[in-house]
Image (cartoon, rainbow over all chains, first blue to last red; front, side, top):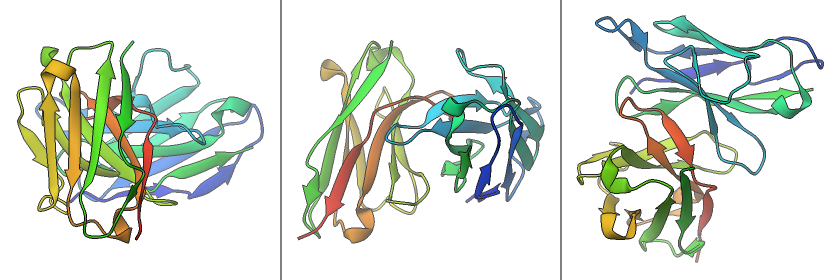
Length: 112
Length: 118
């Protein structure tokens, strides 16, 4: 199984400041033939299901604000919230879909 | 707008079978995509349980494969999860979702809490 490790477990960021979340996979999730990393990011607010933010490591889902961006390739990935808003308080998860079983990171809690 | 809704008992006795159904609206399961189940034990991370294609082909997490059955009923536009021989470790919030052909989940149900207790 591919193990997804997120860091930090939690972080507190001031409104308007940048938040950076890291995700590391135990093996590469990059398909060389397509040059795509099979990595997604989700946002989960209290009492709600996860919401897809980013797929292919850096492609923003329709309707997701452009303050959210994903980067990285291979085994190391980053989700950046460029200017934190109050509504961004949530737990963020990464997920690899390179191989089954599909696996998720442990989550990063973002607070103000 | 695609919507998914889980339904089923919120309390299951140890050693019995957990059964949940996911009703889909706004999209016909027969049209394609994969459909899956994910769970989240209290305070823990998300765990993929398994996925079914509209044709009925299934993919299960090896850690649960011996106990899991996922099926689809296209006529009712729903799919189901059965997890046998449950224990307290199966207590979790169970989500159903639509999975892209690639593997990420773009639509999720609200989730349903299943507690395993006598």
